[in-house]
Length: 458
Ligand code: ARG
Image (cartoon, rainbow, N blue to C red; front, side, top):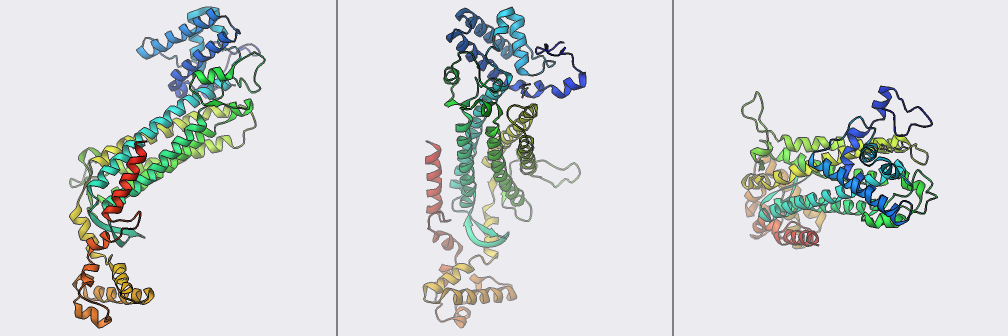
């Protein structure tokens, strides 16, 4: 089929060139944005007297019909069209005749595609934030449930100090809150209208860009037409925010994988989010967590792909930019699916609090509290640190734990020890005493949950 842009050239292209050039397989998902954008454009052309009011109405009616037929399945997108913009315009002209050919007045596919992308991406930002809210609320609910479940807190993956599982989960809620903020911020910059920038230089028609922008719910317009058609920062921002979010989901996934291993046995995932092995009957694998961890690399790749595509492009539009959609849509689909699976996986995850507690008892994670005990009795911290380290070494040599040493053994090291040392190194007490803001005590974690929930309900 001869191309709509045939004129200067015959419009007859090599079939492999068509394959390379075609983007409809990817951009067809923006049909709704393309059609509503075109409706606003037709309305603006009519309001400005660039076409007659009747012509504008006819165009809008035609576009409405196409949208309705696409949604009802009566009309199928013709995959041999070059892209979604060409498909809609061709269909409109087929339905309306010559009036259809007026739609593209004072417009180019360059500002049209930028418009569609911005509309699509602002909705995607909203969807991402909504899904993040769901996951964050789930983490808050789980944290509430396990706010007094003691587990070892780690540094270097070595048992460090006792914390609660609720505290640990709230750390992820905080990360995801920042992610949500990033998407909200990204939406703000995405929500500026490029339509009316035309091919690159603006237009000689008496258009009203702000009319179109307002009609389509934009907060303002791209103020430089060259920038308006060339800017894909908003895509990069989404990809960056998605990459950081995926990094957070990946760290949480890694912990879920560790926690559900036999060695840890800290959590049990619901069967719905695990798989078995085709050969080893005993297996319950945390594939979904592994996949979320794995998909993170894919989203990073999407970010790198678009950064690389854009880096050498002279102003203004270049066809390279058509490649933006594949990366961005892949990242959106991946990130949203991961959120969709992570949320119910966390909601149905059961903590094995006895195992967590047992692990906490074995790792000398109260050694800091032992040192702090001596400090409170007047010993300088470095001296107390050394003395406590010596007691840990003694326990390791003898296969015992700090709680099992007798008061005599403690007093042999320092006269400062009294009966109350046993309370000071009791794990529940160690946790409960960490009342500093952001700390692990039940009261501190409750405050964290309250604060997150208050922000979520804004
Ligand atoms: N399919 C194209 C894209 O996604 C639309 C813009 C085409 N513009 C052009 N000057 N050929 O980028």
